[in-house]
Image (cartoon, chains in turn cyan, purple):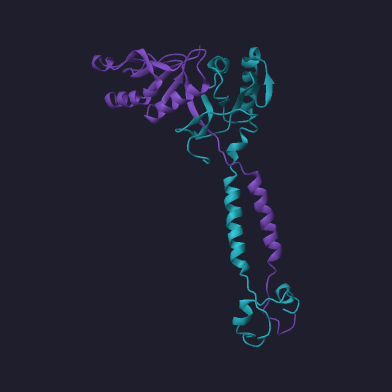
Length: 165
Length: 142
C-alpha cells in the first residue's frame, strides 16, 4: 500500500478503514479523506461498452454509404438480411457498389447470382432507392431480377417511429 | 510486498481511461438509424393451375394521388367492395381494413404502379397492406 496511487493523492480507501487485517480507521485523523467509489464507475462503463457493442449490429453493414439517398419509411418492416444490393443514385444503377449500365443489369445480376450461389450466400435482392425516385427507375431492376430468377425482393426502408431495430 | 501489506488496491484509473476511450469510439461508430426492409414477391406468372381453390386477391392500381382496386376470386357479394373508380389514396388504409373484415382470407395483393408513381408511394402502399395483414404483396412491372 505504500506505493498506492490513492495513497499518493491523499485519498483514503473505505476498504482500508474497514479491513480486519490492518484497521486504520481513526488513526490518521489529520488526513484529508476523499473517497470515490471507482468500482461502480467501472461497472457502469462496462455495461455501457457491452450495450454499444451489441447495438453495433451487422445489419447496417449491408447498406453502407447512402450518398444522400433518402429511404422511404415503413411501419411493417423486418430486419435486413444479407443479399445483392442494387442501388439507384442519381439515375445510376449500382450492384454491390459497382456502377452498372441499365442494359447490363440482367447480365450483371446473373453473374452476381452465380457468385453468391458458389459462396453459399443468401440470394436476396435488396433494392435501395430514394423515396422520390419514380417507378420507371425501379422497374428495370424488377424486370432484371425476374429474368435472372431472384425469388426474394426486399425494398430497403427506415422503420417508422423507430431509430433502432 | 511485506507481511503487513496484505491489503492492496487495483489501480483502476487505466481501466477507466481505456473504457472511456472505448465508449467514445463506439459512440462515434455506432449507426443509430437502422435499416429495415419490406419484402415483396415478383408478380410475374399467376397462381398455379393445380391449386384447387383460387385465393382472393386485391389488385391495386396507383394513379398519382388516387388509387383503384379490383377484387379477384371473391364471391359476388364481396365483389361489390371493389372500387374501379379511383379514389384518394389517403382512404386506402381504411379500405384495406374494410376488405380484410369482409374477406378474412384475403392475403394477396398485386400493386400496379404507373411510370410516374414515386418509390415512396409504392412503399407506403405495401406498408398499408401489410399493416392490415395482407402479407403476400407483389409489384407488377411496367
